Image 1 (cartoon, rainbow, N blue to C red):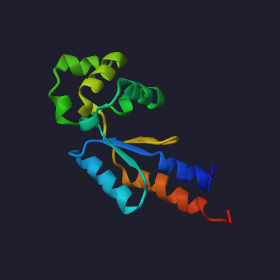
Image 2: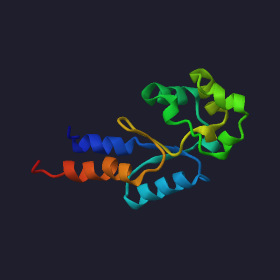
Image 3: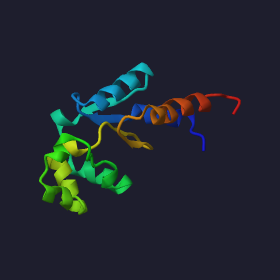
Image 4: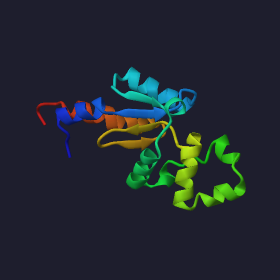
Length: 139
């Protein structure tokens, strides 16, 4: 399915990058977007926080396990009982709201995109290949 030029521009115009400026993966993503001149708005979740509604919205779209970050020190510092309780969605969502570092970063969100983490290949496929392919008038 091909996107029109207007829909591509709309995706980029409305794209938000959620992350922390101290997060290496967020830094890599921001640099990648700048290098490839992909427009975005950055939301520093450490400075400006994140609403519980936003976290629940992501859960409804992909399921919280997709963005619960279990590979960081914050996770390792949790009590074993807390880690076990994340099997329960409500507990996990509340915990992520309290400890925003438990959310995989960066979060890339637009009208049609929701991605967690930095993955250069996925970014290229989503933000560069579609644009160059869809802008070809012979297609």
